[in-house]
Length: 212
Image (cartoon, rainbow, N blue to C red; front, side):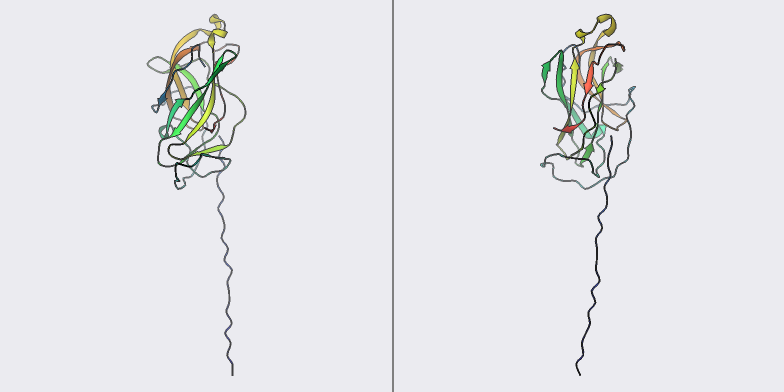
């Protein structure tokens, strides 16, 4: 008599988890800012907020990734170093990139428009209107340690405006809010801004963050 053994096989399937979709500035003289990582909590701007989750770190040697979905925490004021890159001049304005560099070991993600405004005095009070947001919000940019994202800034020569309306004022630099962040960074950039809030145009303009 021949005995046979019947083996049974059970199928196993793996499910992949979904990831979160994140939503989400010049002067009468050319700014001369270098870098700054200091924070300032006061401003009249009202940045939006959003929720995120953390993910494992990866090597900082890779090119920053751009996309619409990610699972890293948002880049916060204390996570980054700010600086102004080299730019061009034309049509009464100076154009320079605002460079945002992750200085922390953990990766972070940034997407949308930074809040940018001129500030002056020891108290860092805002001078004139904040930067106009130009264009549409771009993709999220994931930054490993040492990697940078950029947001293009336009600094309008305030001598283009009627002094009586502009009210030219010496400024010490820029207050920067990262997208969806409630704390700010101060970036030294001596120059001249308009304290008047009824100028016929924008003294500062900012575009969405992109891979540097």
